[in-house]
Amino acid sequence: MSMLRANRQSWREIFYTGSDVPYAVPRYFFMPLSAPTLYPVSAPAANLARSDFGHAVRFYSDDRSFFDELTDFAAAVLRTREPVIMVATDEHCKLIREMLTQKGCDPERNHHLLLLEAEATMERFLIDNRPDPVRFRDLMLRNLARARGGYGRNEQRVTIFGEMVAILWSQGNPKAALELEELWNDLGRTQRFALICAYPARLFEGSEHWEAFRSVCGTHSEVLPDESYGALKSEDERLRAIAGLQVKARSLETERARHHQAETRLQSRIDERTAEVEQTRTQLQDLSGRLMRLRDQESQRIARELHDSTAQLLSVLSMYVDLLDGNKETFSPTAAQLISRSNALVKQILEEVRALSQGLYPPTLDIIGLGSALEWYCTHYAESTGIPVAVEIPEAMERLRQPIEMAMFRIVQGCLAKIHEHAAGSRVTVRVGHSREGATLSVTLGASGDFETGNSASADIFRPMPGEIQERVRPLKGRVFTVSDMRRSGLSVFFPREQTGSPDSDPAFSAS
Image (cartoon, rainbow, N blue to C red; front, side, top):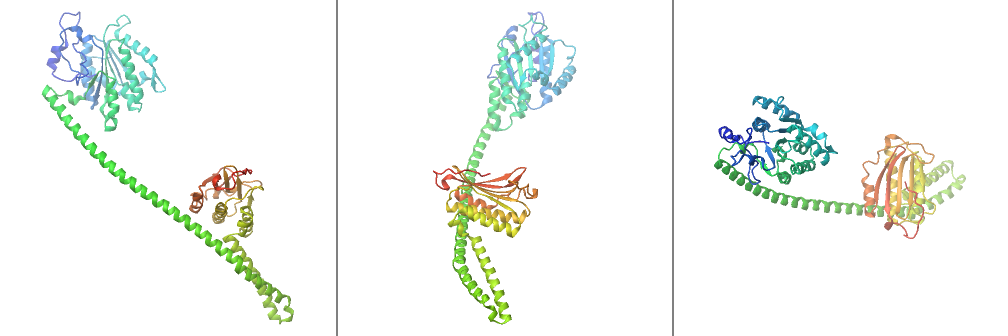
């Protein structure tokens, strides 16, 4: 609580009553809600100072100035033998003791002063960082009784200063602070005391705290500005200060509106640019997908020409060379040797052309299906690289749509190529599954059946996810997941049912 530091002579003149009471009492009261501050005024009767309950709030900017003002008021009240309770932080308790002692009011010897440490006091009624109404009321009733010197003096007014609410607010718990303010209001309906709460003004700096400031003001009957306003001596100075603040407030509101308009325009431009970037990204994805499909189509065309034309011509050439090789004894030794070498070379070229054709686009993928194509490719991969590959495909698995089978086959090709490059020596498992929800493909390194754990250095070779895999999965509405645990690592791809085979079938689902 704070009295404005005004004219000390007028303070002495109005602060004490005459001989109509057995001892001198302070002649002050809390001004109505419309008044801007708490200020000592002369009253027509001594009992008017004790007639009304008041719950004021003071916002202060400078700690030392505020507590100098506060202890001036507290010392004046204590000289009248009226009880005072002050609940403050440990640092502020030390400051209050120091200042009261300097003002000739020893807090250690004054039995009408009850000085409490705020944090320790709150611990006695807070439950889960929220004030408990029963505990709070019981504790404050005991403190009021201690300040009054016994339970038989409930009519005696007690002046209370507290900053527990400010501590809760500074701790980021404004809801508990407002609840505590309301508990003080409830207690004031049955107990006679004047309460002053104090908040550092810095807690409400910034326009984003305006609603919080209004909430705090709404729980009090009087709102007191900081010490800069209280230092104004005359009514004219205070009116000029209010007028200046009103002009500043209007200017700030105008500036805030301008900033809001600029922010709105900036946000609109950001949204436009974001939409353009998103549109460009979508177009690039579509272009990438088309290029990938064109590449697949071109690979399929080349594979078909190699299989249907080149491979056939080489087969015929191989037959002719076989005939020559069968009659090589009729030729000279040199010619016979050349015929044998040519026969071996033609067969090798034929095998390589067939392998190239099947690598570009295996004919079995269209004729028999994904399972046979994967088994052929993985077998050939294991033979050529020395990396063991296990292929697990359900026996009764139905055919998938051609784009999905092609995507799965290409994904396996890409994964095995990456494994050969970064994780040579690992054991690989390729697993295909099918269920009511959709089809799943997983390529993992590590334990599977009789396989032991793979090379730990290869655990993250699919992070980040290969972009080509994402581009193949996205047009088919699929999803890609990484697989990583103590026994294996790799990736898994899921294609939803609407992109797979007949919805009426229900084969077993055995994906990882």
